[in-house]
Length: 428
Image (tube, rainbow, N blue to C red; front, side, top):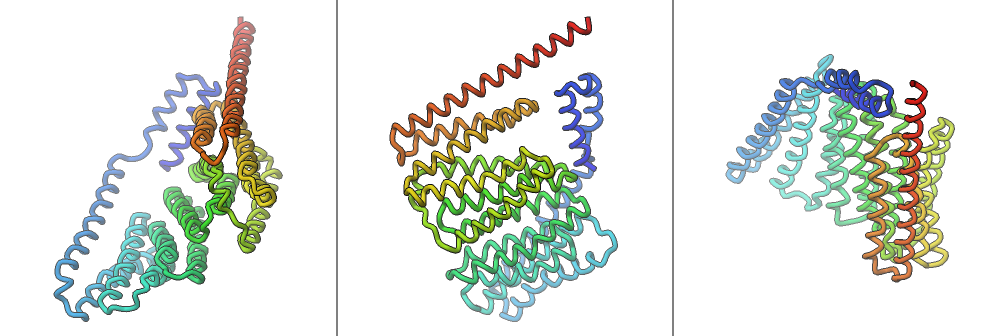
């Protein structure tokens, strides 16, 4: 309910900006809808979370204090005790008809931490294989059933962390790069359970951590920066377009669209470095994977066009622009040509976002697009991989673009004032 009240407060503010309702009436409505949430409940939740952390810390400290003096069998049972307790807790909660979210999350996080801790302590006590990445692998695998039975975002987050730890800790490549993706795929459907029950906070927390874990796995699995940025652009584009599918869930859809646009801008900024392009190679398996992902993005973009979401569908062009720049570099070996393509596309995208945001009255998005153009020019200034001539052209291009956008703003302002003046004259 709190999310719906917050959404309504934002809608009322937008209606006031667009002149759909009078300012006085809008302020009265805002006073009602901005008083969302219950302070006492929020304080109780905060205290409950703090109490859980204190209990957890106290248990760890107590076990640590006499761990070294225990026999091997004693260490085994002390490591197993919190795990058994947490298992009984989540098993009993999963059998309840309608357990609260706090109970679900507490049990899920407690079980996840106890599981990882028990595996680690038993591994240390019995001096097992030094391949510590296997602990993260088995911990994540055994935690997945509890995450689904409890429908706990906290447990899902711990699965993602365990999956990402496997390739990071593994001393070998190969299957350790594949298994984490299997774990990520196994835990992903948990998101749809949150969406089904409209659990907005759990949806946001899990989806963003899962996305961050995917980005981390790409960073570990792919060594070359441009290939990483290409895969990031695919994820960001799908995030923007995916926001249309989740339009019922206002906060989730809004975060997907805005987050995707932000990361697309960041990707284009970073990919403008000539040094990254000079290090690029073209392994056959990455080319095949890239082609498959481009096909997926194209299909989703086509669906957006059929839904008449033309502006959103433009996000699907970002991976194609990255691919076009890579193809130009592969054919010519000129990093400047690849960066030129990205720069032109980035300036065009920033200009489109600025004009659209200005017309819609979204001042933050308009300011963000101008900031992108300024940052883009500043990065060119410090990029030693380009000549002064190239950098001069980039700055001239940025200057022309900002001048045109300033003229657009003045024209829109003039039209608004002219329309308002005509309305006043008509009322007289």
